[in-house]
Image 1 (cartoon, one colour):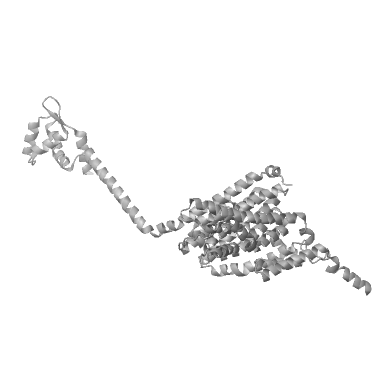
Image 2 (image 1 turned 90 degrees about the horizontal axis):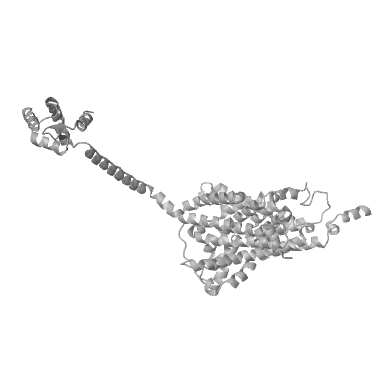
Length: 375
Length: 154
């Protein structure tokens, strides 16, 4: 009886765990706290946070419980991440949710989305210089796109061993957009610039909205075919939405599918942060570079907006440049908040959505380019 | 720690430059395309109007070409009046034989009851269908006349 009890105690998580597991559990609890109490991307941080808790329960090896064990349930669910299945499904839902009329009304704002992608490539250079292998550097750089699914998709293809830290970094920074971006925005713009009012956008017809996903898909995927899984699903989802005749499918894509996949993605990505795999100097490097990447992307968009103003007759508010990172719609919301802090009657949200959604397209193209260069 | 040579060794500069350029050019082309989309749709909506305009333009062009062709035909062939005159005179010249004297032809046309024979022969002279041989006689430029007669009979 005594021996049996001792054997049982030796197999409990309390006995098997070490300090690293408890650090990770603390991080998981912080994620859950940020999601619930601070409302920072709760749909992502709560599943990831809970996934971190699940992945860091110390278990007896060989029982098929941990995510990295071949026959575990979590491992099967994680297959959607490692094989790159979940990100395109999330893009399908994003497409079915996104209204592209803002970029159709003012296409020039798309360039801000392109400018913000500079952060990806600068961070790629930084990661190379710090000694990361090229495929790892490309996966780290894509964090600057502030697009979780894109970061996971590219990492699954190029550096699957880094999915945990990269996904957690990408989603953390996406959640921390309201904290990271405003200081950079204020630093790089003057008060006069933040007060600039945008012109009223023109009305966009239904037909333009229907034609856009087809044209955009053909152009982007002919240019960067490796972006096909992401952009194909994004524009397909949007076509379902805009065509109206397939409303049932669009409804499923923007509710049931994206919600189910987000749950599975969040939980498994969280669970993949098993302490012994996650708490390494490489992960710390990834977090530092990720933050750098995000900051550079924000700054690139802002600076490019200021450069554009040198040539434009109707000036644009440079704050819009920071929405070029593809954290939809958080970075657009931050533009609205920072703009309204200077002038409460200035509404920038609608205008900021243009660089924001073009950032989604831009980061997917960038991922496609990096993937094709690395393979 | 921070090694710029690692960037060069892994072709980092080129990859970054190419990457940024491709993203920019892709989104720029897309922006240009969609900025023209509503204009193209307006043209599409007014396609009937434009089709009509094109049709009218083509019609005018064809009409102009036909007129030009007709003018050329008049130039290369004989006018209707000369053509009508040439028919009986060719027959009469056949009876007289070539070369012929103009007064004889005039006499014959009068005998045959050809109206305004003077002016008709004069018209053929002006058209250089009746050509002097330099010895006081004349002959007919038959090839043109015969072509005209054959064409009219077809």
